[in-house]
Image (tube, rainbow, N blue to C red; front, side, top):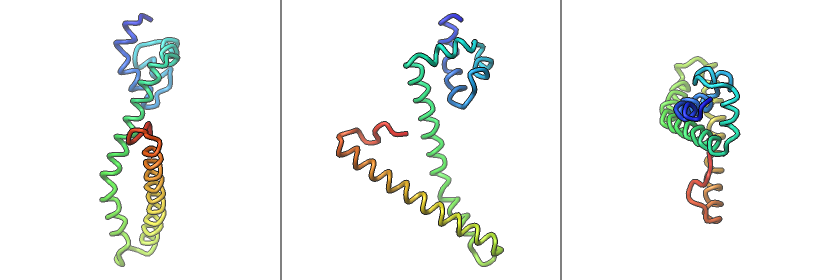
Length: 129
């Protein structure tokens, strides 16, 4: 396959792979051969762009989930009202407790990592995903 064709389809290829497409599926989607894609994946620069795109997608998804978290918590809290059936109230209580513990642990870890990065002289946020 010509190098020009790969460059032309590179954004489409990166997006397909970042979204979880197999090499075979990405090849069909982008009009490339499997061999061409494996050659691209062997290039450190291409793999770096792929990793950066995946990281960006994860950051965006995390942002959307964070934005929706407040409403989700309000929903769980509303399910704990006496008017809700006991099974629903129990499920909401469990979810609140489980998620609360997980969020607290993640928050503590993020704080500790930020402190370690600060001590190590790394830029804020480091190279985390």
